[in-house]
Image 1 (cartoon, rainbow, N blue to C red):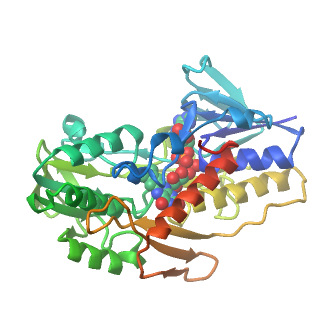
Image 2: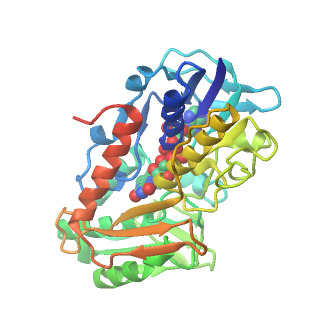
Image 3: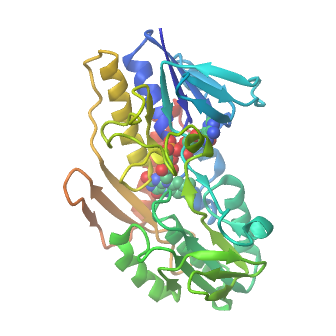
Length: 391
Ligand SMILES: Cc1cc2nc3c(=O)[nH]c(=O)nc-3n(C[C@H](O)[C@H](O)[C@H](O)COP(=O)(O)OP(=O)(O)OC[C@H]3O[C@@H](n4cnc5c(N)ncnc54)[C@H](O)[C@@H]3O)c2cc1C
């Protein structure tokens, strides 16, 4: 029986685990290692700010995938040894002891980590920073937006690629919505500082800029934040901006154990978007945000790359049946509600990555229905991957 170890039980990891559990029924032992005993979905996290999303709808436990024979090990993977086919996992509250797992195939899908270590002052003033990117900090950001009565909100996007291209724009416009709703917007400046020459994804920037202009939001592009202090940030041009609320996304990278194992600097090296094996090891594959893909880091790409990785394992195992997949996605960016109603409107965009150059399209009309559509899309993924609906 082949042993398949998948590091990271998120969108890509669970996509591969479910697919292989179906196609290799009884012929492989599939183990997912995840550092928590639950998964917290990303796309609608920003709506926690306005109260339009609740934690219980976007958190899933793993128990229902156990029914399919998928094994779960809860613990942090801190080392992999591809020459000796070993994965090192720390102890967890789930009852797992420190352990070393052997594998025939290793799939690396741990997503990304936030790395502010190159920003001066980050170590001292980390607590001033919030983002919509993780469960604790989004809640702190919510509390700050709903309790402060005057000041400056600074939202920051680092150099692309980073996870979820529009999330900094979403944070900016949802901050505007909340402050307008509370009747204190006139007492706040809102500034979006972007390290890129355009807000991301670039092909929606025209509509983002129009909406920012209507809302009195200042946009600063091509500026990296190089320093944070207790109430200010400094950018690469030496400009200083004062803040009272800071929502700074740190530069992203894959977890350190990947670099330490010689599997890639920044992200995991792969042969191509269709062949996600590591260039040096036939038995090490990667997918999702951790893989060095030439595409935006989002849920659809994570899932599609996972299907390509699953197909490669099936091919290596001599299974002729494949999953049908191609690189293309539909996305929705939350654009807030300029009147301050807690009913977010969204922009819909699409990107077909099968053509060269890739073909982006968008609907210039912001719609409430797109917000609801994004929710249905996210819920459908969670049900498919974790085996149950939120009540
Ligand atoms: C705020 C936010 C908004 C987003 N909005 C959108 C959107 O609108 N549209 C869209 O398509 N995508 C969006 N995304 C992006 C999308 O969620 C990610 O691209 C997708 O989840 C990537 O899948 P993944 O499997 O690579 O990583 P993840 O889904 O993050 O899964 C990685 C898993 O690995 C685990 N893990 C990490 N390190 C270790 C370790 N060392 N040991 C063990 N386990 C580990 C993690 O706990 C996690 O469960 C958003 C993300 C966020 C955070």
